[in-house]
Image (cartoon, rainbow, N blue to C red; front, top):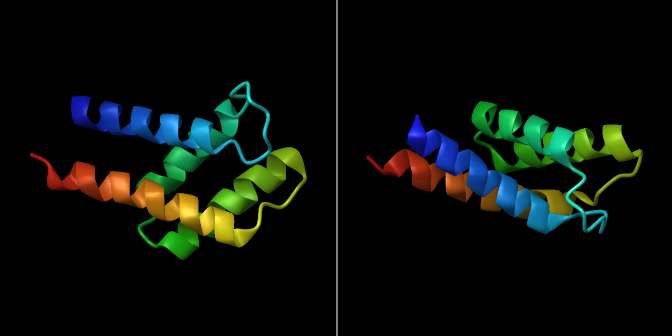
Length: 87
């Protein structure tokens, strides 16, 4: 459980750093929570990227290019994979 909490905090850090709309104040709490949920549900980078794109589009009514979403999805899934490999 502690490991999952640390991993989720890593997800939060990465997503706050990503800042796709350059808000600089970390105003993505809802989107980050929804994205973390999606990370736990999905293992495919393209599927996760599409979900991330739709989460942020729903909130901001602006589409993030799918290439950016794929890049962040791969980074997030790498963190997820690294966590599942540790015992």
